[in-house]
Image 1 (cartoon, rainbow, N blue to C red):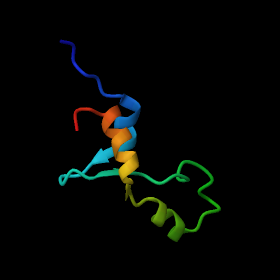
Image 2 (tube, rainbow, N blue to C red; image 1 turned 180 degrees about the vertical axis):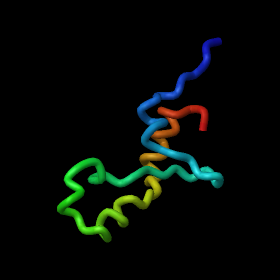
Image 3 (spheres, one colour; image 1 turned 60 degrees about the horizontal axis):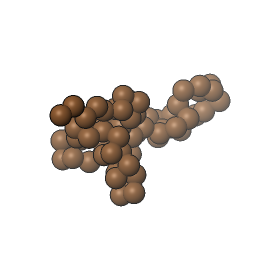
Image 4 (cartoon, rainbow, N blue to C red; image 1 turned 120 degrees about the horizontal axis):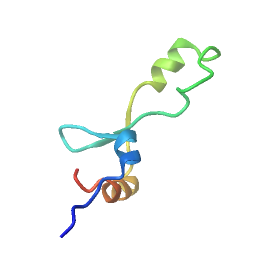
Length: 65
């Protein structure tokens, strides 16, 4: 039986905490940082959790978690 492969793009975008929760980064931090305030950049750097509907899709993309 062949191994089940992880989608590498999903593995780069999401991380799993020690408790099993899935977190992802915010959008808007890759360019145009000069016009953003430091508080906005700090707020965008915080990783947030995903919804239950997204969890089902992500677990299908990353079967090893």
